[in-house]
Length: 461
Ligand SMILES: Cc1ncc(COP(=O)(O)O)c(C=O)c1O
Image 1 (cartoon, rainbow, N blue to C red):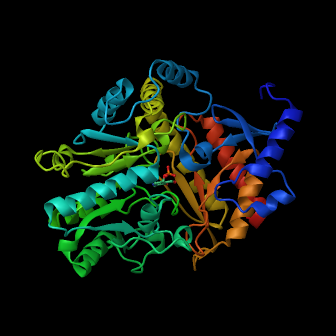
Image 2 (cartoon, protein in one colour):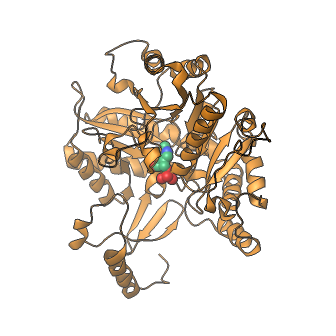
Image 3 (cartoon, rainbow, N blue to C red):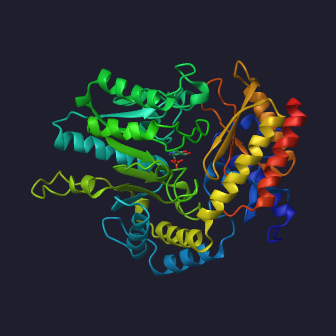
């Protein structure tokens, strides 16, 4: 770790943090007796905290964000140059990096043509919802205003995004929520709602049709889905699920919104998670990995068909998309995103994600043979999860406290992994792994060796 800040300075930082910072997702009582963790520096996949302790980060900044790793000088340089030339102008005007990134991004997304910029995943999804609502008013006489979402999926932290969240612990105590967000069943075959069936994927998709018929097809305008559910337990879709979902959307004229906030920009080994499943969305949202956390940026990307609906009645002063996001006009975001994309291409990080993702999966399967506490492993590319159970036959989830203890024991071995957190009552039992896309074979082995040791220590073998 660089010596720019010495220990005494850092003690001051820790005290300032303890006294004044309200940490995300944190119960602060603990900081009366232990120091809050302050991360000081990062390089590649390694981070150092204020005590000088080094950790291998297997979750890309804690929440699957820093896809190209820490300390990328070329991103810092392009952002610096761009800020000096033109840092900001409202998004009603264009910018050089905004135009070039939109062109480069849509080139990776056949069928998608327009990019609407904002700042966070939640906001990108809010934009999509506002588009659906305005289309409902303009095109459907106020009908087709409901938006379906799936149990266990997450789409953000703002009130409407939470209303469309399928994780009860995230939503609890933040209601009442706005009307018109309707849940459909999850598609996690390991916890099948229909017992042991051979056509689980089809059933889970057909369950969406049942909701549409119950609500009334005239009232439902869209469905939002994660290609692979992230914080809800790393749920890869079962065989047959996506083609049927697409068919249902076409049958009932639903806009298909794909939330790529986690899967987007390479995480699963292709540019976008939905591209693994041969589907054509109407709207795609993305954030975290777009600029790997070097700048705040999110995108709501649409087809030309969706875009045209906001353009073709120029006589009506209310017909265009009357939305603004102040910081959607910051140029640092698209400048960083362009360089982020160049790095992924130049270093063949999609190829590395596929190869290292296979290695991670193989290692996890080997751990599963050794540790009965691993009930299921799931994943796509460098986005993997291991669900821990107290008993393999009953699939009783391992208590959250024990899963947290496993995380602590992994950390003790110098590796940071994640777990489903304040997400589903009784089901916060999945370990989550999402290392940066340039992870090496040795680092993959270091991650799974740490999990191996931690499971032996905490739950025995
Ligand atoms: C799938 C998904 N969508 C949306 C969001 C919200 O993104 P943000 O925290 O940038 O608002 C998240 C955040 O974890 C997410 O995992």
